[in-house]
Amino acid sequence: MTDRISRNTWMAGGLAAALLVLWFVTTGDTASAARLKSDPEALQQLRNAESAARTTSYEGTQFITAWSRSGTGTTSLVKVVHVPGDGTHINVQSTTAAQGGQMFEADDSQHTGGLTGYTPKMLELLARNYAVVRAGQGDVSGRPTLVIEARRADGTAAGRFHIDRQTGLMLRRELLDQQGREVNLTVFTEIRSSVPRARFVTASASRTIEAPWAHQLVGADLGSLRYHGWPVHSGLPDGLSLYDARQLDGNGPVVHLSYSDGLSVVSVFVQRGTLDAKSVAGWRRATRGGRTVYLRDTVQQRAMWASRGYVFTVLADAPPSVMDSAVAALPHGETGFWGRLGRGLDRITSWANPFD
Image (cartoon, rainbow, N blue to C red):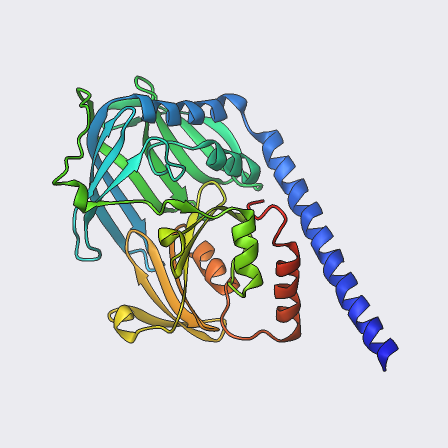
């Protein structure tokens, strides 16, 4: 009996190890192929856009639109003011689909996205998963632009960026599905240079600004969470890699995990507890992986459910198919022997590089 258990354990461990090796080999080959096809000048244009967003004083109006599976679009109006050396003040107008609000993004933030350009980490993810190339010239609100595309392995465009020829700022960002349809669009409808101000966030206004989660989780923190049972994945399907992890107040009950492939961004909030029915009032009920999930489409797709003593909230700027795959990959109840084995491997490897 002991020999048979040992053989079974060895076979399971060997198979799991082989699968891990195959995953690293195949994903590594895909990443290398994507990097070889990228145009260095196109990548440099995106780097320059990030630099321009930090060094240029400007203000303007953005429209952010997301399309659901049914083709229905939801749009938010956003007022943006940027002061170099300080940061960006963002005022989101309320809509019937979502409540507005204000937030502040410091220039040294690692969460820079949208039309404020690509941080080095996000650009690394983009080049790892897509071929980034120049795609001609365009026009946004009467301003001439350079067009950059991020293309899939089959040559189709997954993302498109318009860079202002005069200022170097990114004026338009499109996220496209496999059929070439826009699923997410962020665009400046007007933008102008502004006179730099010492600081636009006054003491009276600072209470309305959302402070970022300051406590960043590093490898040892994530390893400890995994060891204690927290479902912290180092990656999700469709090439989504964990690039940032934070905890509220440094020791709070909520963990925020940020995943991206350089285009799509999926935020996963994990909290111990049970799902309060009031928190999903007005959301639509759906089934994913045989489990009940509550969904809501705003300018960000949202999903919420409870499993194994945790409540999961997922927000995504991504095609619906990417959102569905991410939700399905997260825990939805017990998964038997292979699920337990996978969680065991996660614990064993949790002290390795968790962001790769």
